[in-house]
Length: 163
Image 1 (cartoon, rainbow, N blue to C red):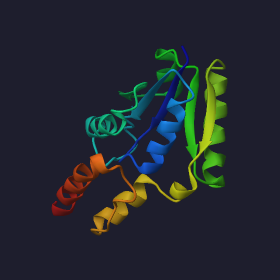
Image 2: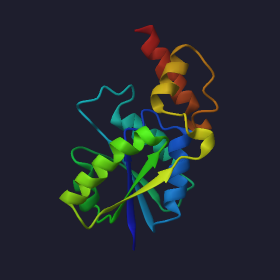
Image 3: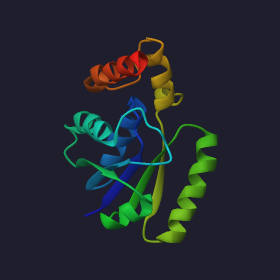
């Protein structure tokens, strides 16, 4: 059985992320979406909230599961017996950063390969940061996030704005 990991912060999950998840899930027998709990970042959503949103989003993808993790992604992948890590690319600037990470991961664990998937054109501009920015100014984010999490994102934005 081929196990793949799609790691990220998913703060929040976007339609671009979902595009990569759906396409990755067709390549492997089992796809684990790893939600990074990175102490160096200040996410808007807690790891628990991000896991919950992703579980809602992938509930119909039979071979996909969601797990939080800390530490090195390659160590998480090894602990789950994954042989493939998926990364989405929006632009050349993403590639420059991602190739360094992929090469480092390969040096740490040569048995795990990184597969880059280019984001579908309609999502090439999209990022979690853009979603949060638009939402913070009460902009319409229905074209950016899965419908199932829209109320959760808007509720969180309202709480953050009221603080």
